Structure formats: structure tokens, C-alpha cells
Length: 77
Picture 1: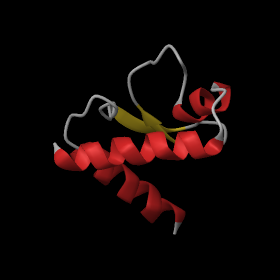
Picture 2: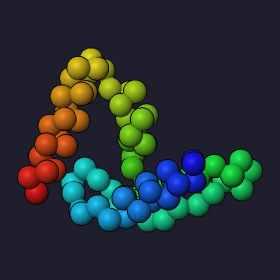
Picture 3: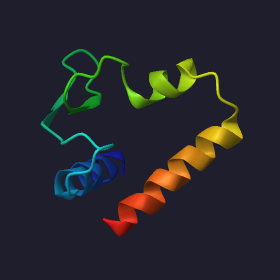
Picture 4: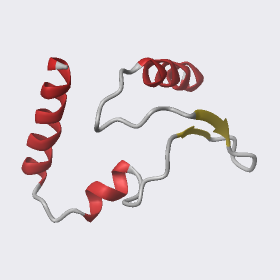
């Protein structure tokens, strides 16, 4: 089940159109120690999406509005 979800994520991300807020998928790999899958994108100075959001001093409702606006705008492109 997990493998199928991972494969779907790779497929979906690899087919996304270019967007200012979405990095291209460069590839994927599996951690040699744990076997965990890893999706590979360009290096970002602010870290990954989770660490970026955790370091923001915004209330959760503001973050939800921000993400919702970006998703809405991406549908218009």
C-alpha cells in the first residue's frame, strides 16, 4: 500500500506544470539505512515545507488562507 502511494506521489509531482511555488522533481531515492523513500528537489535556503511553516509566526488560519489562495491561483494558470 505504501509503495503504491509513493509511486503515485512521484507520478503526480513529475507531471506538474511549472509554477512559482512548486519545485520540479529531480528524482527519488531510498535511504540505505532505513529504506524510507525520499523525493528529491532543488535545495531551498528556508529548508523543506514543513520546517518553513513551523518557523513562521503566523496563526494556523493565516497559513490555511495562504495555502488556499496559492492553490486557487494555481488553478487559473
